[in-house]
Length: 630
Ligand code: 6R9
Image (cartoon, rainbow, N blue to C red; front, side, top):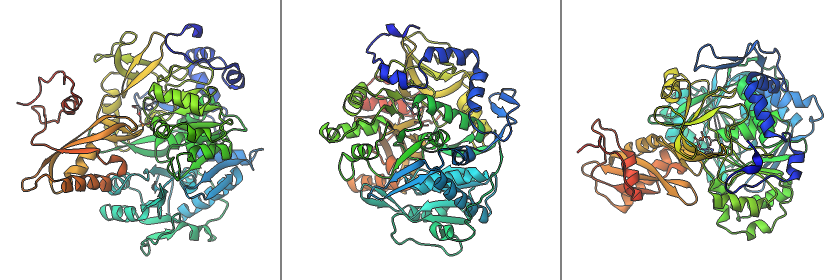
């Protein structure tokens, strides 16, 4: 394709950007990767440390259970830390942290390695062994990074639960993963208030019986309940001889599990996506290097939360594998004022900012003046993730934040993919609202109901046709769900759950989810979680949740509830139900609206037709309703 003749509104990268970029010619790289797929990944894997090299790059003998770098022995935590402490990066900053209240902490690679080893020794002393699951429930503090790296060092499988989730979400994730250890903070600062994480965890622990030890990180300092024999303060243990600075590491098979991360899918409970030490390491390392063009002197900021996949791949593992300096901020973007982000970019000299459309739209609302008060000239690249970015927000980000000199990397990917899958690189011409094309070598397609490719500009289902190193290996303890969910609709194609349009230049335009997943402010939630929280309230007989467009959040949750006999509709009850969802699932899941109804549209087999509810709410034609019950 000739990149000089693209259709529509196109933003071409400047000579300056291209001259600095690792990849100057995307077409050439893509051609190489397409024709030499395994060699492409093997070369990248060779840039990392392996105690023993692999026998095979890709093993596809048992599809769809693909394996990568089989026979290889490595450890991702070793590659994130130990490797750098042996080089000029030893005293380079690995992590800069700013708390919402202005506290700061910095860790060199040496220091982050030391803290990780100490933490890992504490875990070992609690009996944590290779393969054991450890649940982590914290805000955006350095200890969450250290806890993840410590687990990985000793081969334990971490399961991070986002700090914005609440009692039932946490309980069900602890139980499903059968974690014996929980690492929690006393609280987290969020918009000037304290989120009482330990208190939420205490309530969750009453609902599930697997946890034997709780490590508590002191952050907010309010009084918390400490159960004798179960709960211990981390800072006290870190001062004991058991927290030695020497910690032998576990040599991991490339296919050994690294972490599980729960995410919402079509119907039912959240499922735990499994990622591994080898392939995930190569995928996150390479994608970050090429897309955010990491250079030695960069200060990189991914403003996501470590509790979501974006944080796992691009706050923790990707940046550290690249030996970068990563910035982590604890609090809200507009606290105490809407210039907080811009002030920090100026203060720390951030070069790369990676965030979500919802944050951009939220900050855009406060106007340009807040941005223009600050010198943002350090910025070189911008990024977006989590949901489609509308062209207005794209242009504001490009002009007001990036001063028309920073390309925007709109990266499409998923918890399941582990790494960027549709993404530009700095040298690629951009179209506002499109993530451009698939990562080099990866074959994707847009197909109809029968799995046939659709024509340019027609809407269809997004599928992936080639395996990739950081792909989901399975759903934890549920191989069947892995096959059914992702590989059963079209044989040989991974089903993403998104609908998309591909234009005449091969650029992809994501439209949104086609299943029961709702992206609220970029957070992935399932209708089932919200509905089951509602139904767990004594007044509720049945409930249905849908997502409707929202100016800032992208989507907002609308719910419809049938009350049990004996309960009557009141504003007080509706508020109580909203609070109930917030308490059970988390504040992010709190419905925008709860409508009390007498009946719900259902199929004859009794399934709620959310599509019909959505069409009604939007005043649209509900389409085919032949299966609707009388
Ligand atoms: C990384 C992450 C995955 C879903 C995905 C899609 C949506 C993510 C996007 C995007 C349009 C982008 N999504 N990035 N849509 N443009 N750049 O968000 O993972 O939480 O698993 O969600 O998010 O719908 O299928 P996850």
